[in-house]
Image (cartoon, rainbow, N blue to C red; front, side):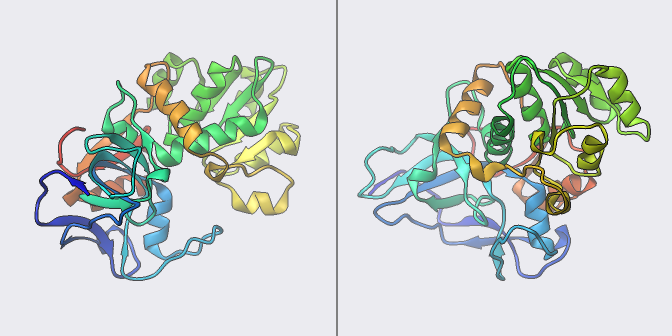
Length: 318
C-alpha cells in the first residue's frame, strides 16, 4: 500500500434523523483506509444537488434510493488520491480524480472502487470537477436522447441551473438554436453562451411562439414546473420531450425520461474535457466550507442558484 502522510482524524457530513438542513452535522472519525482493490481520495470539493436534500429530508421519492440512519451525505466529489490499495495498478498517489459516491462525498476522505473514477484533465479546477458528476452525466444523456442537430430548435427549461446550463451549451455546440428559461438576472449569461433567454412568466407560451415562429422541435426539461404540459400545448411530439424532473408527467404521458443513469465515465470525461478547454462553462454559484454545509443546502433549497453550489474541505488543490 502506497501512502502519503495524512491527519489522524477525518471529518464527514452525516445526518441521524430526517428533516431540513439543520439535521446535517460534522462528525469526526479515524481516517478510512482502502482495501487492496480500492483507493482513498482526499476530497477537495463536493457538489450540492437537489436530490441530496430530498434524501436527507425523508420525503418520498420516485427513484428507489436506499436510505438508512445514520447516513453520510453527498454524491459528487473531486480530490487527490492519497492512498492506493496493493492490488490497484492504474492509479497513483497524487492523481487528481472526480466522480460520484452516494452518501460519502462530503468528507475529508473517501475510499472507492477506482473503476468509478475519472481523471481531472489539466485546466479544470477541482472545484468545478467536484460539481460535475450528476449534472454532467444528466446533461449529456438528455441531449443524446434526442440526437440534437443543426435542424433543431430546442427549449431548455432551467437553463441557468447546473443541469440546464450544460444541456443548453451542448445543444448549441451541436448547431441547434436554443431557447432557455431562466430568471432575468441570468439572461446576460445565457446570451453570452449563445442561448436565447426567456423569463418564467404567465405569457411564456406566447413568448416562445414569438421567439420561435416556426416552432420548437425538442423540449429538454430540467426543472419541471409544468414544462412538459407546455411542450404538449406547443405541439411537440411526446418522443421529442425529455424530462429529468417531472416524474408525474412521465406517468401520464409517453414522454422520455432519460437522465444521468444513461451516462457513465466516458460521458463525464467528455464534458470534463470541454470544460477544461474553455469551450463549455459550468458556473459556480457559491463555495462553502464543509462546516457551513447547512448554509449550502439552504441556498440550494431556495432554488435560485446559477450553476452549481459546492462545499470544500480546505484540503488544498481546489
